[in-house]
Length: 475
Image (cartoon, rainbow, N blue to C red; front, side):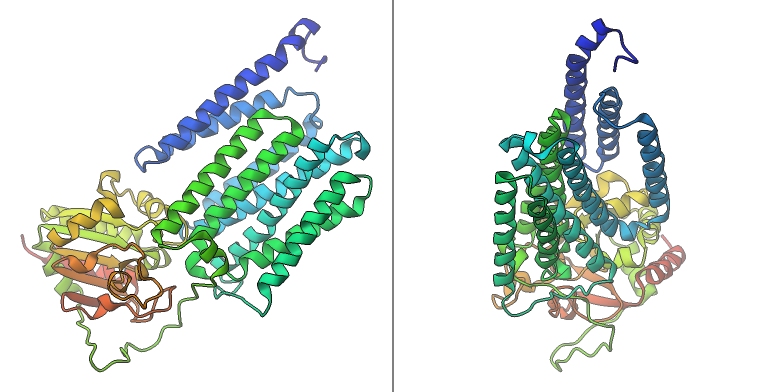
């Protein structure tokens, strides 16, 4: 630091650094608060980004860091990866990207903790520092490997079905015990490098074994939980480095991730223990025929012209998006339909279920990309009382989150799960490729109700056909 500052200024720098860290932390908190609403989420990101930039700049003045040449190389490489990813990754692939980012965060925490440990002689570290190193490696490694398995499941590289085997819980328990024991032995005798190696390897294996039995329907919860893990790993690394900014920012991420995990579990009426060990949720079955499998069940079809007349002469229309909307990349198409309906004087709203899509806020992000007004987006609690007064509901690619079985059938695996009460509307139009079940693997009673019409086909193409038909409807 003496290369840059006179001695008198060097004395002031540590206090100045902590002051900047405090300002950055305040900006993080403001950013988190603003991200709680779609209308202010973008500005929240900016506030948080400014705080992080301030923290990075002031940290660069710390003489304990590596050479500035290495920092510049890291900034260039990381920035290029970030820019390319932002432009290349489709909005439908955002859940996978978030999973990867969680993994990279955990992996970075491991590398920093290990690097700081080996920077000085092992026996010079105190017990408290060794404990934080062990925790950073443990949590970071579980996050790293678990996040890549979650990425594989979301991407289809790894089966979205729960992967289970006999004695799985026993195996996980043994791995956890070995991991704990190796961590304790590392703290007692840090000079033995193989304790650290065992801790690292077992933690990586445990991350895999913990995520593979979780099915595709529970991936939103897993993403939240792994995000929390990455924050906790960063906080532990902050203690290793004695860096207050890293400690607080990691704690914020960890706490917000846990809270969001709890909210997601509530939205599915399931406990976290059931999500992690219940092996619930599977891949969507391959597209097949539209046979209901029950002679007493009948469906009512609708085509673009029929739906155009239903909606154009309605007073209130609610649009309920699901993962099928994301797969078809139909967010712009549904926005066009909404614009045309508004031209006919129809009041249009969007009802968003907390677990619609494959990550929290997935639908909000997709609709925001299509410039859907924020004031038209309503969460489940806000929109549910309005369905019984709604003329038409358009369900685009949603399934389990609108299944009335969750209310009426105690034997259903989703019984008790809060759903969007679309069945209470006067008319429901479901845009879907076929009658195949969703992630929960169960039939949807909504499809066979007297007020429900099925509009079969690719969501984007169906919505484009609806747009064309709406343009032909006279006011």
